[in-house]
Image (tube, rainbow, N blue to C red; front, side, top):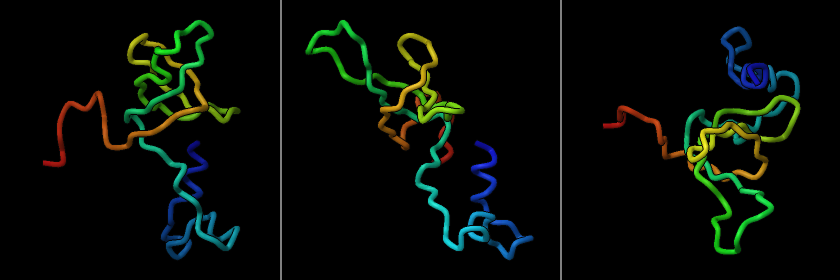
Length: 103
């Protein structure tokens, strides 16, 4: 992932263009870049669940899994790190945030 980010950051050596812009002659899509540590909701794929059980659980986004299309997420309830491909992101809530820097 570090190379992915490096290729999408402007450099003063390249006239404030990204390496991606120089190579492909277009601006990079940065919508896939997510913030570490925010709240997300990952789909639960349990085989023995009741129809009234929740379909998602509160998780913490940790990063990306190398070699897969899944996201690394921390399950708050079970204290387990899992890989999930079906995730909804809530980029405004940080469950483990200690201090508020916005005030």
